[in-house]
Length: 167
Image 1 (cartoon, rainbow, N blue to C red):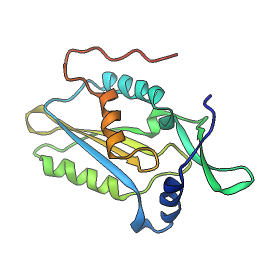
Image 2 (image 1 turned 45 degrees about the horizontal axis):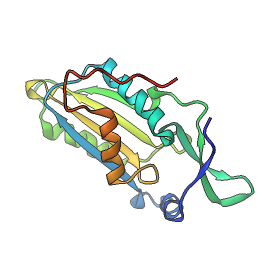
Image 3 (image 1 turned 120 degrees about the vertical axis):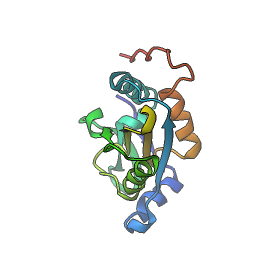
Image 4 (image 1 turned 135 degrees about the horizontal axis):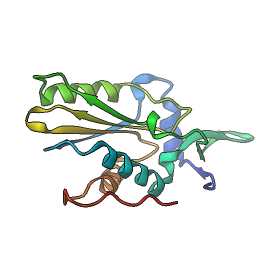
């Protein structure tokens, strides 16, 4: 179990202004893949990443006796099934169709009772490709952080084995 960490003042402001849905702080990263990864390998990589980046297994809560102070706490109900998704495009769909799915996802909010991310593999691009969509709340990561997170998920060598999950 991780010690609670507190959100910065900037992150607290971003969290608070989201009472207005037009001010959502969602980051969406898209990777267009020339093939479709094996689902079990992808699940193993995401599982590994959730151990390397503790906030992927945490949710935001108000600090006891300090209602304006927010902190990260471990989510005792954490499950990859709530955050990792797989969709198949219909036959004849295009990259634009996959990107429209990601736009729709980016426009929707997060369940604040869970960790603030969703990853989706969209399969069925022409030629066997796929799209990997990484949606995260800005309090979880920023653009640079999402690139660093992607480094835990992808290898440049397609024959690299999935990383071992820490115990």
